[in-house]
Image 1 (tube, one colour):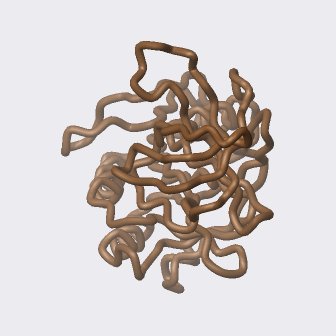
Image 2: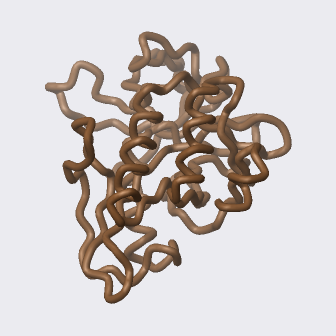
Length: 245
């Protein structure tokens, strides 16, 4: 996935009100960016970090510039724009990168399903031998020490809800997949963030025990493109769940 508009560099001053970030460009111009991320952005919103944004040039937008990338620990790149995740996974499936999800004749996005008024990110159907597949995508940018990626970065009631919906699909004989889109070049493995949201972590263990498949793919990120290209190991913190993952 190539960025359609060129990215411009700035220095982060602060991120606030969830959807806003103040930055300072190299010519000392102060700008307020739209921040397309509803999470806490823990470790990805440190003041004085280098950030990159694009300018929509849309005069109708109150904040025409959108924050896209951040430099973490002065050596890694992370894409904080969570709206990229679904498109990246669709692209990776279509390009054969996600080997576990090949062979389906049709791919749809944002399909209504489940018992709790949900929409699945990706719905795969028309496989010669496998049942229809429901794929829930989660974006991972929280990195702890030693390349450890964690999800979520804040308590997520929706995340637990989506796991319940996936379990329901398994109970109906369908295939259900949770796919972590790792949009951080420093993350080499992924686990649930037990300290952040133990309910989500426990629900994930239960979902795996019920037959939900869990996988993660990491991104290559530059100032011109972002592409999923590598398998990232997922560990759960439970020997039973880990063996089934």
